[in-house]
Image (cartoon, rainbow, N blue to C red; front, side, top):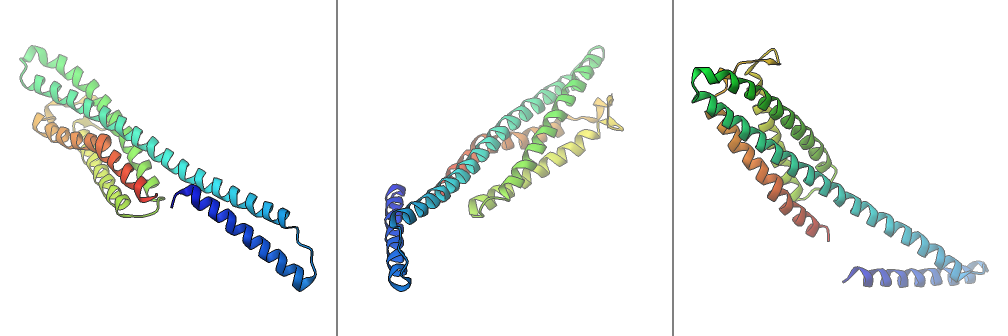
Length: 214
């Protein structure tokens, strides 16, 4: 049954209920019932409740869309920055001694950018996970919560490994020799999967969740 049909039927039933109650009170208690006034009051309350419920649902899906856009952007930025580090470290590993200082300076800036993107992405995922916890639970929500927690774990693992390349968390004391292209390539593979989750996986979840609420 369409929403418009249900709404008309509900209003009609409310009218009958109002009319019946007014007649009953009039007969039992001798109270004159203002049918139109009572009906209008009930309709106003019903419409207000319906509009508020619709607003809540619309607002919820708008927030969901906003989070998905944020994750899509942050996952793309994060992958771009890890790819940049990967290329810089490969160039360093294959460079001659005279060029290594130049690659080291580039790697410091690349790592700083990567760390910044990693931090932003992690905060976005935390906010998204908190938002998911407030949705009505179904299999789609639970599955997406599990995937989000998994990628939060990926962020933490990379963060710990990245800090090993710095002395006392100081980006000016960068030990490029501790960064290996093989290890960064592992990060790259994990983050390209995360980017796919941000661009494709969440879109699929959104459609499934939307269908489950209709």
